[in-house]
Amino acid sequence: MKSIKQKLFYSFTVVIVSFLLLLFALFLPPVQQTIIQKVTDWFSAKTRTELKVEHFSFSLGGSFTLTELLLRDQNADTLLYADTIQALFSPFRLYQNGKLSLDSVALSGLVVNITKLQKDSSYNFQFLLDAFPKDTLKPSRSSSFDLAILGATLSDCRFSHHIFGGGNAAANYSVRNINAHLKLGSIRFNHFDSQLYHLSATDSSGLKIDTLRFRFFSTGDSLLIAEDFFLTLPASQLKIPEANYSLRVDSFRGEISFAEIYLPDLKRYVSGFKEFKEPIHLSAHLEGTVPAMKIEKLNCSYGDYCYLSAQELFSSDLTDWKSADYNLSSQISFTTLFPQFLSSKSLDISSVFHLFPSFVQLTGEGKATDCRVKVDLLSQEGLICCEGRLKNSFEDNWTQF
Image 1 (tube, helix red, strand yellow):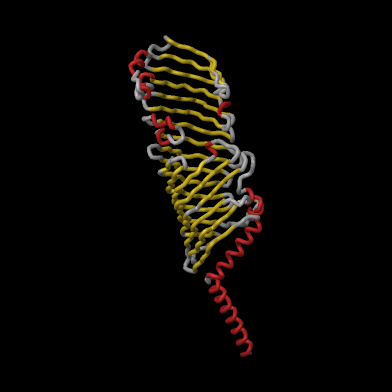
Image 2 (cartoon, rainbow, N blue to C red; image 1 turned 180 degrees about the vertical axis):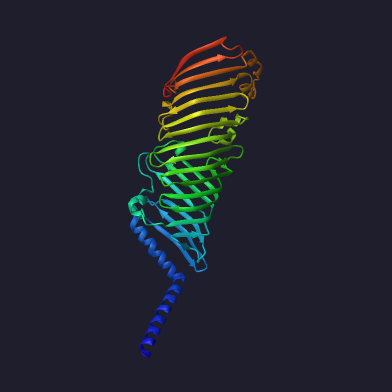
């Protein structure tokens, strides 16, 4: 009987000691490097590309660090790179009730390059979607895995999007000096809840984002929702109380409650914007199903000089603005708007504009290529009025009236 107890004791001791030795070995740098090398080799073989991690460390105190992570696309170009990725956690509450909780994650020197070789070709990350099909990533109905990150920071990051051999200027851009602080309250299949507290960045053109913040979350019916969206440029700001996008039917809806835009903030794109000294105030309701868009209750003003309103501004295709349907009206002050630009030239002809009526009201409906217009000089309403039709091919630069 004593011999059996001794054997059980020795066996139990061997198991405990072996477990402790294995646990201790996991914190040895050579073992950690071997583990991460096995993982990167498996991923590289699965995706038929290159994934490298220069150094990996894990501590029982509650942290792990990756340095110099590099992922190439199948053209051997850099898709993703990070100087440092560090996560902090509490070992006692790391995983509870199916929820993985991290206290913080910090990414430094992150670089993401999204490209297309041709306008109609696939993006350079398509190989990841092919290697890990959606069906293989979908958890079972009984799965309740959830990930929460209480605080995440981005420091000195960059993002670029380029379409070679096609695409317009809007599709080719690069954003640098990205610094952000956010919270990921819940991330699980078909549902997430995140809060962006602050983001600042600089576009390659020189456009600077001082502040960007919003709450972004999804619901179980594939609806993406953004709340309390707030954006500031050096002199401009934009507020959107709520906007949503349905992944199921590709529809969107949003309300611009207030926008104050100083065009000099955008002078890098259009040099003539630097001449506009007054702010543009804008509000509108937008909705549609991609690629169509409908703008309702559009109100836009430039200082005290120009006012534009539209009950309905509809485009059947966001990529083809020439086919858009317009129904709008505007009021322009000739005596105050134009002299501020013309008088800055070598010849001051501002006094000439006192010969014109105080305001001109323009209404129009139709398309950009074929629009019916009415012009009314409002010094005496209806006294001088004309109506006509504007046609423009845009390619041939001709206009009929």
